Image 1 (cartoon, rainbow, N blue to C red):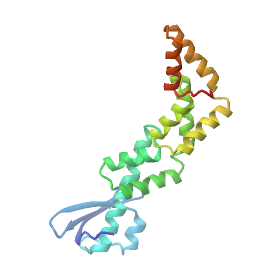
Image 2 (image 1 turned 180 degrees about the horizontal axis):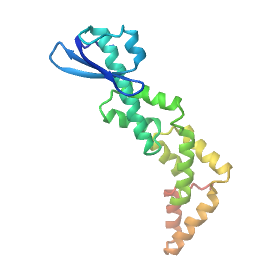
Image 3 (image 1 turned 120 degrees about the vertical axis):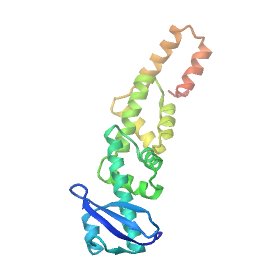
Image 4 (image 1 turned 90 degrees about the vertical axis):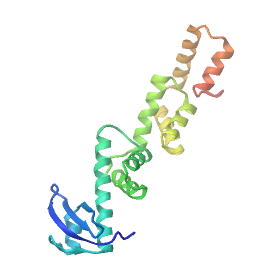
Length: 202
């Protein structure tokens, strides 16, 4: 853990039910406000205003503050809709959170059950088949591009098909009818089927 120097506690206040906001005047002249859990504050000796914090302690507080901020950002992002682990981590990094801490926050969201990649991939697979008339190959490719593992993507397609949520034979026939209604020649229909993710075996 990188040390960031030392400083003096300049203020201390509650920051919600499970956090304290600790302002520290660093020796370099900058003041930082760190949000930390009460358990960590107690573990470092519950420093009062005016107490000096040294390198290792201050670095630990800084990292924990970043982690709590990452978790809060993650929860807000997840309130707006599903994100897989990779997408959520990338969004946190774009907010200025270090990749390592962002990864830890994402792991926490997974452990809490807020990210269920298998279920997400399955819902997307069904939507791609029904709305876009995509075949298995294109669905797996699209899910992989979104950050789902190839195994999860293939499982989502397989499970959806086995559960009767997707009938690829019906999807293929619907796509063929659409192509014929547009007056496409047979070779162009075959090309469209390939582009939409249907191989010769479907």
